[in-house]
Length: 113
Image (cartoon, rainbow, N blue to C red; front, side, top):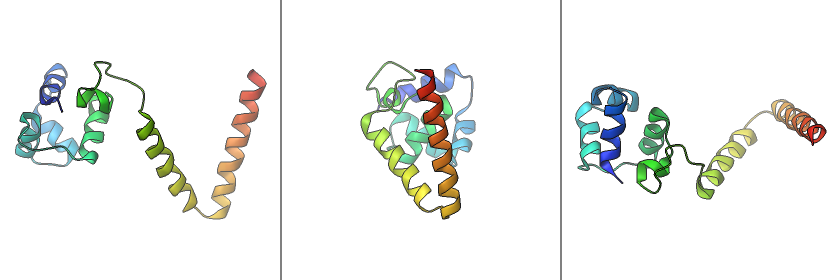
């Protein structure tokens, strides 16, 4: 990961490392260790940092210079899998509501074509 991206983003937003650390739920020292590369980011912190700075994970990883790139195929699959698991755990009545919403949305989209 490009550690200087974390510092660069933080400085562009004129925010302290302590503020970012608080948003991440870690100590300021832990955050500064992430920023300097003394600690490695786990997946959860990487996603939180991308959300905090409103950039893509790929941007933070240095895989693109596009700050708000699209999700990779792997990220998309992960998002859909998570969503499917959450829907599966809902009561049947709530699942039916989601089916109705999706069906209604598809019908509206078909009418726009």
